[in-house]
Length: 109
Image 1: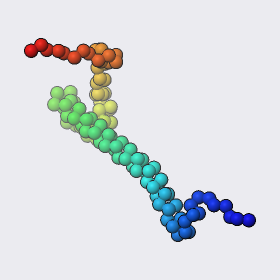
Image 2: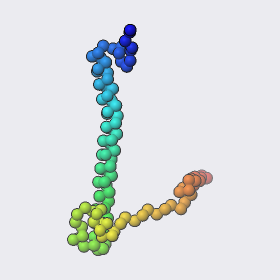
Image 3: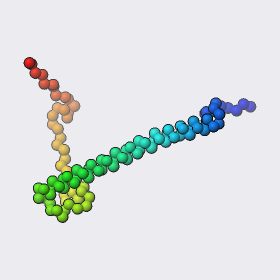
Image 4: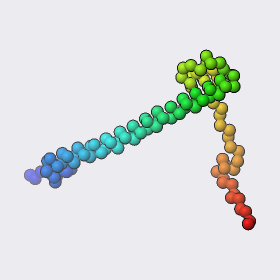
């Protein structure tokens, strides 16, 4: 009975092993790189969030709403403890928020 050909059996065993190994490396890289990128982006987002909280604390200190003693520890946790939350963004009531773009301005020169 003839052996059935399957997979990469048309190549020499050493070439077949290299191709399988290369394919495995490519697949693992395609999974690991996006995960690493997403983790890094999340770390950057947390860093910028902490920076924003620190600026909010400095603003409250400048406005004399808190004392210098209150500016210790993690900025966002400290803001939460002091009850100084970020203000919610104001909802837009223009036609852009409804999905309709405003008409372009036309000038007659």
